[in-house]
Length: 106
Image 1 (cartoon, one colour):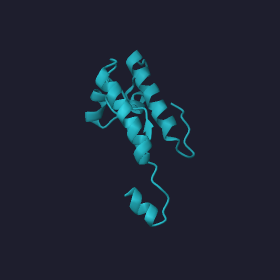
Image 2: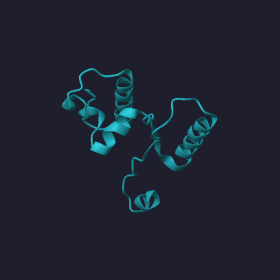
Image 3: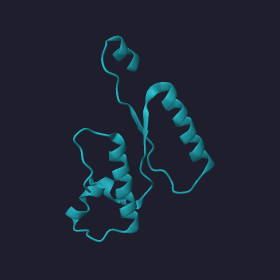
């Protein structure tokens, strides 16, 4: 698809790869995957953005069609440390996307 766009004179896609549901432990395989993705990013031409860790809050919200940003609407005012860390992961992802006219205010 990238080659066809270039042949047609179109601007290249801003392709972003995000790893999801990463464990918190430092595992050898996890580092090998990160290294392989970095090599592919240079070779193929995509950006790598930070993903989300494996968190209970995501597993609880997803089946209900909710996100971290819906917690206040559910009446949850006291965030756990895990929820705070998850929100920081979300901030980092939005920041890495570098979207025009989008500010991070959550």
